Amino acid sequence: MREAFGTAFGIPVDRYTLTNANGVEAAILSYGGIIQSIRVPDRDGARANVVLGFATLDEYVAASSYFGCIVGRYANRIANGTFALDDKTYTLPVNNPPNTLHGGLRGFDKHVWDASDVSDPSGEGVQLRRESPDGEEGYPGTLAVTVTYRLTDANGLRIDYRATTDAPTVINLTNHSYFNLAGEGSGCIYDHALTLNASRFIPTDSTAIPTGELAPVSSTPFDFTRPRPIGAGIRDPHKQIIVGHGYDHHFILDAERGFINPETPILAAHVLEPNSGRIMTVATTEPGVQFYSGNYLDGTLTGTSGRPYRQSDGFALETQHAPDSPNQPQFPSTVLRPGDTFSSTTVFTFSVD
Image 1 (cartoon, helix red, strand yellow):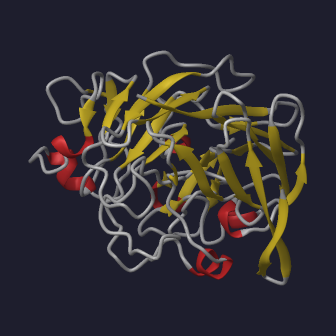
Image 2 (cartoon, rainbow, N blue to C red):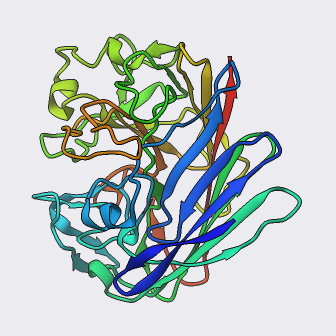
């Protein structure tokens, strides 16, 4: 179902509500490709929205929270707002001093995308398209991007990303939804039991830039190789927990997939909320996932429930390549060249225990 959802920068914005045979719903905005809500049942059949967000378009335009949006042209951070490609240095706007974060001052989350219904027998869907011009936010090359959301009858919300360029560039796309499987606005996510298919993570410096080390999670609060409540380690004195004010780190998946023409998505994460019984799994073709525990939610933003969001009222599992990869050649490359296609898929699937 398509409906008008206001105007941003003088451009009409639509909301597409996707539904499946089980009554699961996902609402997607043409502004920023934002997932505004996902309504799924608990073990008793009661449905609730499990993603953080706003009730109005004006709130999305005004905030810099990245709730539910497409992040690009480059997700996560690039150190000091610079990178070199083919012996040329590019300078980006610094919006997270001293670094560039999530594409810059006006990334993909702050644009109205062209949208169309692409529902078919595999599920209801919406496809979003935009052309990022050469030089936008300092990035080289004109980038043609499509992002397709499809809701399946297996309760999976599938996101397919595709992009091509007319000049060498770097690209790292993701979705930045914050989840709370107890229901949006219900409180903190400390009791959510998280499992990550990752035996290594990437430590960062005080500005959240990777040190270059690939550290084992064993015997640290970063060990989610078996189910563990998010809150169990969030007050740990481990240096990286202190640096990140909680979890805000990239985890390297134990089974990696290629960057161009990836294979079938692999399981990256499993999350159980014990009271509702809701389960979410995350499968992806990306080589890693950024786990963020909502450390900087401070009560100043009010969600769709009318309740303010406080620290750790939601968590994000952002499937992507490693932060600052253009400056760290030991990480998998994020370079895209003319004639190649960036291709990436992530699936969020919901069930109950």
